[in-house]
Length: 311
Image (cartoon, rainbow, N blue to C red; front, side):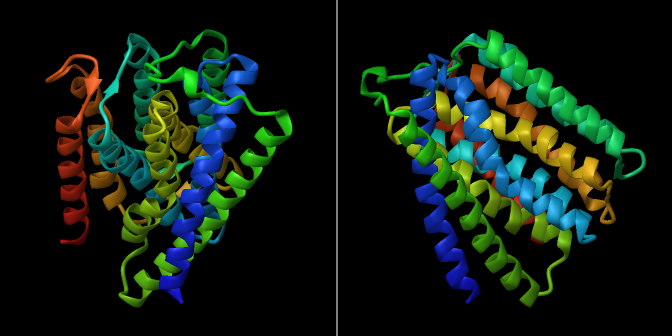
């Protein structure tokens, strides 16, 4: 039964990613908003919904390590796994606004989270309010000033949809992502509990990979359809949203007190390190491009991280 949940969950997540992409492209065309902004708002909100649901549910039920580990693991997976696979499939060209705006906001969010939890191991309600407030400021800035951070290869292929279709695709895509994640995580946790794995490891590995599958599905579909602005924006945006929205809102509802200190002594440093690494990878070996060589580095690091979690 758990295996069936995993398979059905994966299917729903792939379909949901495709529907969400159609909606995002439709929004960007109708509103004349750069696709990177759509990727970092509409798509990121929908693909971060599984993390939000899981983290709030886990924290309220007294499983803070799953709530926190889910976000840390998802952020590592988004860059070490999803971005790696995306650029192994196709090279992404990056423009200046990526390192002037998007990457710095991701790093500031990550360092802010680290500063809040490193001393007492608790993400308090007022700290959650600060995180979520920073998200609101960032979104206002994005919508007013952000320009394309990635070159869109085939803008002539874009399809302008009527409003009812945009809303329909967004709704069924978001519901499919949510339902698929629920099924996948229920199956994965059921399988993990059978092998008596700790909540921290479940959160950082199995649950985080499960909740990163929407990002993976949306990004691969985006790249295959040459919508790379949405692909890159979705990944950077999802990491920002995971910290500022998911942990921010969760800790506003109920403070998150970490019990397994491996999250603070090991896992969060992996998140900070991989996030930091993305910037130099944009400049070397080929300036302002992410290609298969960088993808190989990222995926090797991710496999090393997973190995260290279990052995």
